[in-house]
Length: 243
Length: 109
Image (cartoon, rainbow over all chains, first blue to last red; front, side, top):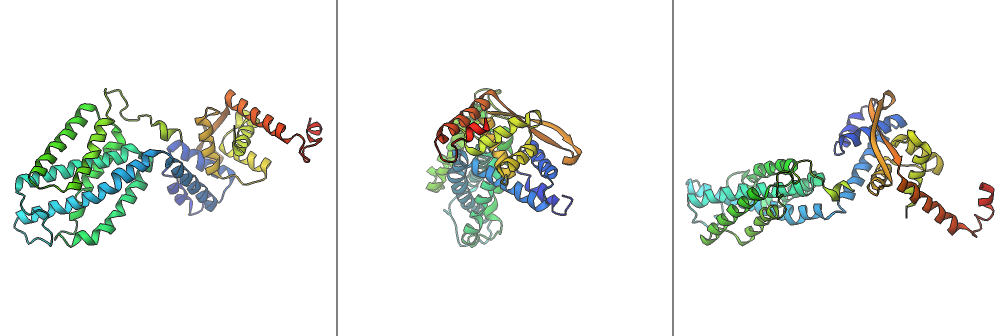
């Protein structure tokens, strides 16, 4: 087991909990498995573990209801915000001007909404199914090449469609740590997003599909904890821990 | 009702007693069942059985031969013992009269 492949075995075991990794890698060493055998053993375990996680509804909800549609819409909103900014700054804009009439106030409103939508989507993705987070995030990033060619023609900036990534990653980090928001901040966040969306909608500055991005915020309200003790970090996730 | 591999695992852990942990159970299963036992199958089954309350596990001590890594110790619970006994009885009942089992249980006892 002193082979050069050993660091690879360690790396393969990273998705496992610390204790679990200790036990599995220790067992491989004790059994005198070759590095290759250990690598396949650990990979097999990680694969089985992932498969079992998908028996729950949570990863499916996180990926297909919030993750994939959300990342697609957020990429479009990112480009829309960039185009509006370029137009307002008098820059020569690309081929697409989403509505063409927003002023600075609506731009600010869109920027806030983009941050809030991205944050809530990231939060949901992480808190709903933290153990499938990496796979879900990777699958969401598959949307990037699909939308990339289509969206890149619309703006001058190469990274316009990725504006949502930073707040989304921030939301993911918070989702892993906090799991569930408290009811009052969750409600305030969802209400603020809703009011701003209504304001943008009444000014004809919101695409109808953008209403889907409101779902994560209200889902956070629906699943919010009532008290400070009611499951913050290290919360029990019965479905996943039992698998 | 237990599955075949679950029964093998519980029985091996019960036979090992205080020395039941991942690597020892895996070795025991491979020796008795004469088949390979993957780490993945072993640990996912241990977790499933623990979830059903048939086993309890805890982290044991680390040894040099394990590269200083801790063992995951296993103990069969009372419920696990009853489930294994039920499985065994069911196998004995269903086997009675089968050509390969005739006279075998008497010889074994």
